[in-house]
Amino acid sequence: MPVKIESMADLDAAAQVLAGDKTAQVLGGGTILMPRVNAGDVALRRLLRISDPVLRKMTVGGPEITIGAGVSMADILAQQGLAFLHPAAVCVGGPAIRNMATLGGNLFAKAPYGDLAVLLLALGTEVSLAGGRTGPGAARRDPIEVLFRQSTDARAPLVRAVHLARPKAGQVQFHKMARTNPRGPAVVTLAVSLEVSAGRIAKARIALGGIETRPCLAVGVARTLEGAALSEAAITRACAEVLRELTPRSDALASGWYRGEMAQLHLRRILQQMM
Image (cartoon, rainbow, N blue to C red; front, side, top):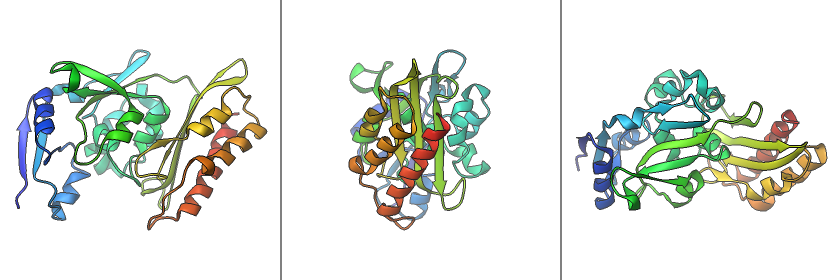
């Protein structure tokens, strides 16, 4: 059955189409959907190309940063004000892929992909959605972890933009382990954000990719660190908590056991670097 591709100029109108048609999906850069189309995926019936300029808008000069869902990895890498996102954005394929791959598409990429999404999760990012319960022209915001828990391929919401506070220098670290570094599919991806006050960790967010099908927060690991000074003892306790909280998946890249071992190893290394 042929795939129908439609162009739409209004984001909220596209959101209404998506809400009413379970076969419709948004076609951004095409790096995820077009391989499925070429492989003959019968679930793809209607693709929407949205030209609304709000999707390419970026506000990067102030303490709160807004990045439209249609912004590409290459666009992010061209912004020095987004240097804290560069370690993840540069891991997304080669130059040709980064010219096409969008932030919005990365949010819905399933493991072993979605490198930037892992870093955004650690940074406490919020997503604004087109349409929705607030009506056309408005945008409700949800924590990004809610998007990862609730969205599926069939009923993924239409993301307008992401919103996040600019992290302080040294607050966040990102690491991707892949068979082919740095652009291969991830065995495990980690992003750690620590807010330190009076020598103790006031707030921690530990995000992992590759462990589950979507990026996930290690809430128990973060809770182990909060309130403590960042010491070898605290790091050991945090790493031991990883496998008590998470059950890594197995696939052709790595077994669940190996992923768990690598998650602990690289978490330890990241935390030691942040001491």
